Image (cartoon, rainbow, N blue to C red; front, side, top):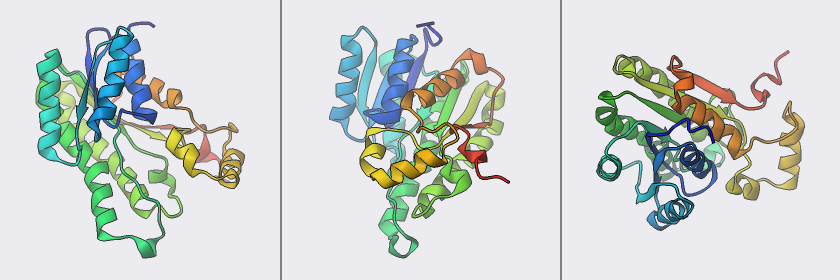
Length: 252
C-alpha cells in the first residue's frame, strides 16, 4: 500500500460485487474512505461491513443511480458521514443482451436510465462538493462502445455515450480542477461474465485477445486508482482503453 488516496473520500456506484467492489476495496487499501453504493442496500452494507472489519472506513448506501433525487441524497449522506467528496466512480450499469427484434421500451428505458442517467446525475450531484477542493470523476465505459458487439445495440450505444458525456463534462468542469475521464474495458472476468459465457464463447474470446486472456477486475481497478490519484493530474477528458490490445487486433 502506497497511500495514494490518503485523506480522500470516494463514492463508487455498483460496488457490491465485480468491478465496482474491486475498485472500492483498492481505494480503501490506498487510504480512501469510501461510500459503497448499490441498488440493493443490504449488499452495499455487507461490503462496507467487511471493509470496516479489516480496518478501513466505508459506508454502504442503497441507491438507484437512475433516480436523480436518490443520487443527490447519496452524495449528501457521504458528505454527512465523511465531510468531503474527492472521487466519484460511475460504474453502475444494468444490461440485457438481445437481438434488435426483441428490444422493448422497458429494456431501452432502463438501460439508458441507469447507464447514462446515472452518470449525469452522479456528476451533477458531486460537482458542488468537489468545486471547493477539486476532484476526479471516473466513468466506466466499454470497448463495445467503440467496436460494437452482437446483440448489444443499446449497450454499445450507451457506452459510446459515456465517452461523449466524459468529454463534455471535462470541458465544463476543468476550470474547477475537476477532472473527468473514462475507462473502456474489454471483457472482464467478473462473476457475472463468467456465468454468462459458454465454453465456446470463452474459447473464442481468448483466441481473439492479443494477450490470450480476459481482463481481471484488478486491471481496471488499478487504472481507476491512477485516474483518481495525483499521478494523473493533467489527464482530463480521456477514455482509456484497458483491453489487452483487442481494439487494434483486427486492423489490417
